[in-house]
Length: 322
Image (spheres, helix red, strand yellow):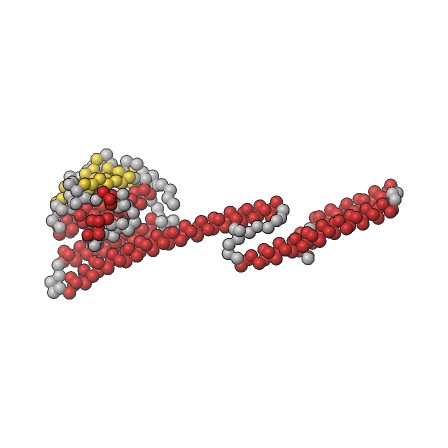
């Protein structure tokens, strides 16, 4: 009751003032006391009816809102009230909608990371099992062991990159970088694989520069060159022209039915299924990184000439993402 009286203090004060004015007018002009009595009685009855109904409504609203404190979802809440009450209802519904959207986005992000984590854990079993078998050999093949360790390093880089991509702390540092430095550094990483698989590398160097993030470009190049080494038969060719890096292998190519799906998370394609080393993450992450940096990446392939991946660095700029 006291809270209701406090909320209606302005109204009650105004009514008291109006009663005082009416009494003053009647006494000053010496009007009929009976008329004054009837008028005051009628006003008293009507005002009391209004106040009783208002107090009843106030009590119901208070009980209703008190009961909803334990309800997590208030977006459905509807009750009659003043314009201010309805404004509050709209604000609550908007906040609830935003909270639901944020919760759903968080759920999708968690599921996304869980899917990647499951793929990563599953794929790491293969090089670990291979290393165990090699270590059981009295004279293990050192080159093969290095190859398996390189695979483990790549898979670790994948899961770290996937975690950084959607992290709010991830920063992108654009600068004019020498493409030759990045390419040669990446080639050195895979040089043991070139030697082990007896692959010829055709790369004559370049003086070109591009505006990009060197760290993320290195990650993308590692994914593309890793795939080229994996599927090449005899040779890999790397060409740079007008800030476009093309990496071509003479492997079996990508079947037409797989070409549109190779950028999808977890999709390895028929060639990847025949090779148990395929994760289905490399191209997905490479495409995601290129999209974030405002670059383009595209693939051309045929069973006769192999596969060529072109990284187009002519445009750059952080793009918004969902």
